Image (cartoon, rainbow, N blue to C red):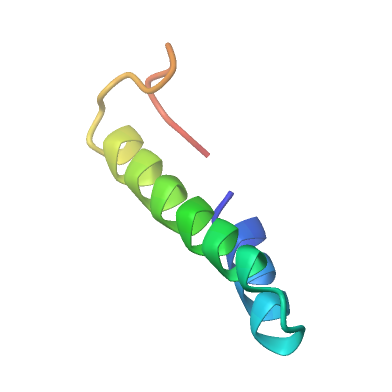
Amino acid sequence: MITLGIVLFIVGLLVPIPILETIGVILVVAGVVLAILGGMGRAVGGRRHYW
């Protein structure tokens, strides 16, 4: 999710499509939050870890 967000953000910067930048930032933030929660041992979506 983090990688997809970074790719969409970069594509949004290169191609003048601002919605790609927005979606990319949202995916990066969501991916980082899920990774942090999973790393702390909290169940994320019924799983003890998130990759």
